[in-house]
Amino acid sequence: MISKTEIADLLQRVSLFGPLDAAGRAAVADALRETKFDAGQSIFARGDPGAELYIVVKGRVRLSVLTADGKELSFAHAEAPSVFGELAVFDGRPRSADATAVGKVEALILSKVAFHKLLATTPAIAEAAIKFLSGRLRDADEQLEAIALHPIEGRLARFFLAAARQKDPTGKLDQVTLSLPISQSELALLVGASRPKVNAAIALLEAEGAITRKGQDVVCDVESLSALAGMD
Image (cartoon, rainbow, N blue to C red):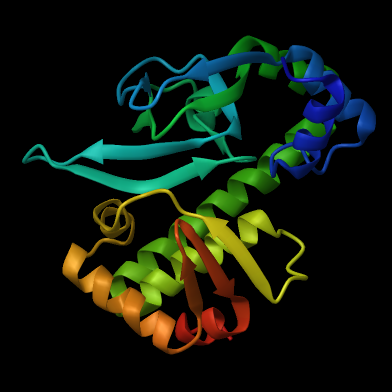
């Protein structure tokens, strides 16, 4: 059971609801319900009707699509305090991707009905939603640019930078430690490259001092990653 204090702290760090004042976040908290998923469990599939959005509390969720030849293409991972599944709630259309729990996942659910009630009663949520969607569009543009224009080490640097910024949204830390319990094959899917190329790119990032691997943890040097990503 997640306490009200924990939910309030989490919502303050969620990009969609963080801009709200305490009263607004309290209104959202009252509309949330808890859920859990086991490792490998499907949360929803592409084409399913979308009736709720999710906020990750613990664990990691893989967002992916199947290609025409039946291969799975992972394009993002959602971890605390990420929101996923929001598009279907915003536009009422079917799910645009599959969502699968990578490990055990704890999440909060906000139903489409509850979300639209909040829009009607808490106007600040509409402004926060617009800013959130604008951020999603910018992220998508950057991801497409990275795949089209940057070598694999640049794409990988951008992946680690995005994860570091999610963990440290203030951007105040010079180094950010990430827990990365995924295989290099999974990482290769996320950055659009083969596993051997990802392995070589990781070695290059380590040699440049941009990352340091410690078991499943990766220590990211933000300045070095920015330079390699072409974003300094």
